[in-house]
Length: 539
Image (cartoon, rainbow, N blue to C red; front, side):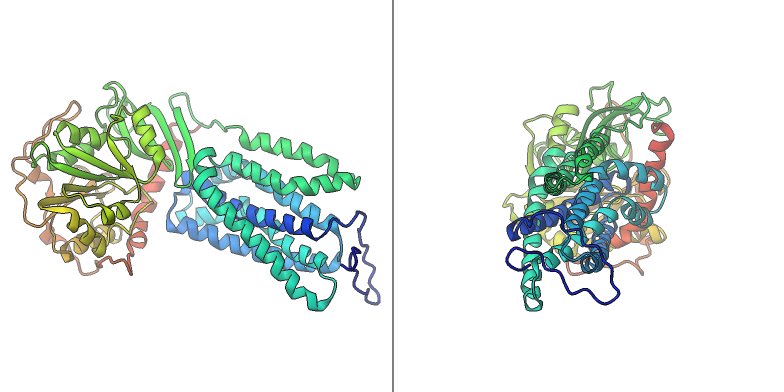
């Protein structure tokens, strides 16, 4: 661009390109503003795309790897196509505006299109399902966003020696937009407004200025863009009801840590009488399930009964640190034992939901923090530290490492005990993660026993019980409304001598590995939950 006139490269012999330069030069600042908005939209698309996967495929490392990889692939494809188009239609502002508008329209549509796609791909594995889903609903808008920077650089460049400076400015401004939007989305927008509304807002912001420019230039297509934006926004913002009348959603929230729902529904395949329970459903996985008829005081699941039974060997007034709140069931059970409980929960929404929908005492001391960070920074001492942080495909592996256990030992009283809630697989490939947790506990110097709830490996829970010295569980006692008191807890202990640890690994901060080891079992758990809800409650 020279003296306000768009730069036109010399036309090669035989070329017959038609340059559509039919509007006034908007200026460098306007183009850089569009670059800023494009960079912001890229990060909005990536974050929202990854979180839209959560109810169907979870929030594991595999999901984020798929989101990051396809984001880079989409941008790379866009850079290539944008470079070719900017050469073919050099100086065309129309090209820039339409690329931005199409990207904005696709971003506005993403909450709706993602639901359609993932209802078809839900039966696939975590990896294949995540990749194929993102290819359909997140990849296309990213390709168009990637096209923007080369086109803007072409419009800003009037001579060869200025190309580097123009490219640097455009990519710097675009990156700054992405950085600011990432913080804004992660810390405020998504936790407060969910996913659909931010996606629609980001798409409209990306498309609105180019639309105004086209309308001012009296472009025929420009006048139709607002109508399209409104129609697509209506599709994305309208809830898609897919559940039967038995599935009553009382609360729904989309946040940076995933989707949370509170649902009342019958306990098909869980209790013989299919009683109605209230569930805390996190990323489409039932995390807490309590009886509605007993005012949400007691869990429908038997594993929640074994946990307080094992803890009952401690006297009233014992101090307990619970890492992971869920619906507050364990908090209530520990309260019935007369314990003083501190809870660490990373998601504030979970605390609010536990109070409002699960009758947890609002006076419960719940600290919103990462569990490992709290353990490393607290100066309090505890008699029991409980890990209840695992959820289907999600594994906070930074907690379960040799160094993590050393941090826990620092805040554990000499007579104290560590309890870890884990899935039930212990043998074969699916059990390698549990065997590695056991081996890591042993390596940390804690004497460890394993309590298993009744049932097959695929449906039971394992509870690791680790302490500085061997504990006597013969005096364990706990009775509640739902389950009878367990007369002999030792009948449910697993013989640790029979556990083959040859392939087990010691988990460390430098090489945690638990997420990888956890995946074979996580696939089965996630698929079983998806199948369960589709079988009984999805229309």
